[in-house]
Amino acid sequence: MKFLKTISLLMILFITGCATPHVVTNNTAFYVDTYESKGSISVVSGEADVNSSLEFAAYKKKFERKLSEAGYQIEADPNKADYIALVAYGIDDGKTSTVSTPIFGQTGGGTTYSSGTVYGSSGSVNYSGSSYTMPTYGVVGSSTGSETTYNRAIALDIVEASSFKEGNPRKVYEGRTKSKGSCSVIVEVFDEMLEAMFTDFPGENGRNRKQEVRGVFNC
Image (cartoon, rainbow, N blue to C red):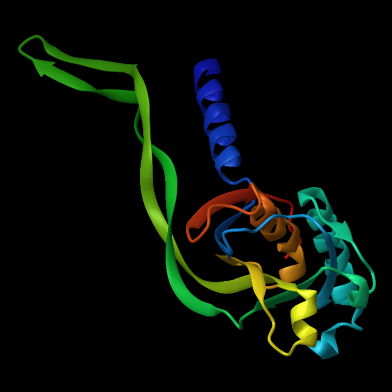
């Protein structure tokens, strides 16, 4: 029994470890050959009507902190900054599909009990006994349910501030981070996606980087 309890505990720990919440992201970055993360920068929303929202104000601070850590000096006034960081984020309505989830359990082994009667020329003899073999575990069934998957994305474009005045905005950096998952509220995965975007910033030019970020969600 002690052996079985140990096996059960190990299985629980294994399953719990695999279930640690995380966000899997795909990150792309494109930037000019002369790009350097330095100078003053002002963070604004890519959509003008969002700049006054409290939600964007919260995200703006997070972007400012990451840009500062990358080497920029944060400037509150866009008119005084060397660069403008245009930020956008969004989530779709989700896609629902049917999924089958395996059910794990004991498939064999353990204690086996047997009893019966043996007949012979001298009469009959009753017998009973038990035997034990190492238990085995595997898939014993499945359950079916529905699952909705949402596409989430955040975007960061860094533009030379002076080029706005010339009427021909010039980008020096363009970053995109996308993820899919069951969480339908972007605020719950925003920190993890932003962490992925700024890992090894600015990243490899013109390549996709897949990254898994652990987090705590309330979806």
